[in-house]
Length: 32
Image (cartoon, rainbow, N blue to C red):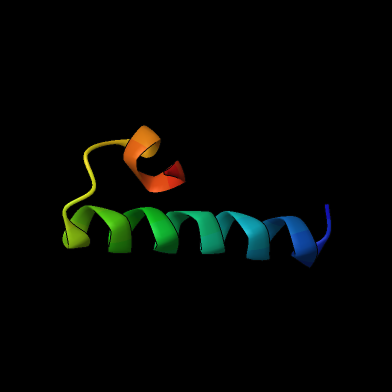
């Protein structure tokens, strides 16, 4: 659709990767 959705997906993936590297155990750890 729009590039805004793509940017959001890229941001979420990037945050998830950084969180895993930082030692977060799953998405629950990312939220807290």
